[in-house]
Length: 334
Image 1: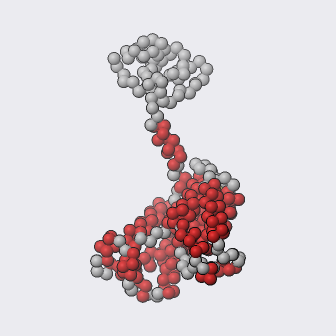
Image 2: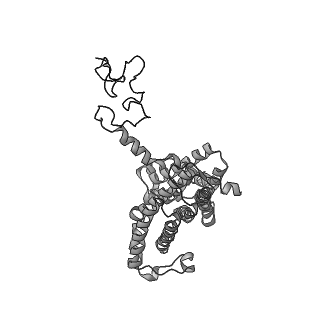
Image 3: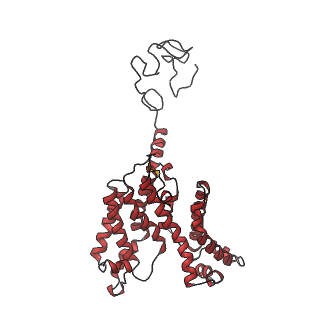
C-alpha cells in the first residue's frame, strides 16, 4: 500500500499539474465563482458557516475581507503557477482558497465538485520543487498526485452513496433527469428525453458508473487512461444536456494524465522557429553554430573541403554558389 501511495512520477508531471491547478484557481475567481463577491450584500444573519468554519472559527464575511481574499488569492495563484516558493505560496493559496470556498458554501448550498481541487491544493505544497520537462522521479510528487486521484474517485463514489442515502432506489426509478431537463435542459437534452425509458436507463447507468469508479485504480495504465477519458466524456454529455459544469473536478482529474508530455512553451518555440523568415543568406534564418577549429562555419566541413563530388570550397558549382554546398532554401540546378 505504501508503494502504491508513493509511486514515483516524473517531476515534470508534478510541475505541469501544479501550473494547471494554480492557473485554474485564478480562472475560477474571475470566471466560475465571481458571484462569491456578492455574498457581502447578503445579511450576516444568513451566514451559516460549514463545520470547518465553525471549528476554526472564521469571521463573518465583510466587503473588505472578501476583497482582500480575492485580490491576494488572484495574485498569489498566478505566482504559484510559476513553481517558485512551492511551499510558502502553496500553503498560502490553499488557506485563502479554503476560506473563499467556506464563504461561497455557507449560505445553504454546497458543491461537491470542489473536493478534489481542495485536496490538490492541500497536498501540492508537500511535493517540493519540480521543473517542467524534468524526467527524474519523485515519490513526494507521486503521493500528491495519488491523494488527489483518490479524492477525485471519492467524489464519484460518495455521490452514489448520497443518492442511496437521501433518495434510495427511487433515485434511479424516479424522474430526476426529467426534472433537471425541464429546469435547465438544452435542445440536445430534449431529443434524448423523447426516447422512451432512455432517462431511466441513464439514471441506472450513472449509479453503476459512480459505484464502479474505484475500479480505475486496478486497471493497467492504457485502460486507466481510457477510463479517465470516459469520465471526461460523461461530464461533456452532462454539460451538453443539463448545463452542469464540473470544471474544478475536471481540473483535479488531470492528476491521472501524463501531463509531462504537454509542453506548450516548447511547442510555441518550435512553432515560432518554424515560422522564422529567411536569413541573410536566403536560408531558414538559423545561425550556423561554430564548429571545431579548422572547420568551415558555412558547411561544417574541414576548411578547404566540400562534399564528395562538389569540388573544393570556393570553387564555383553549377548553381553559381561558392563552396561545396548549395545554399539552403535555393533550388539546385542552373
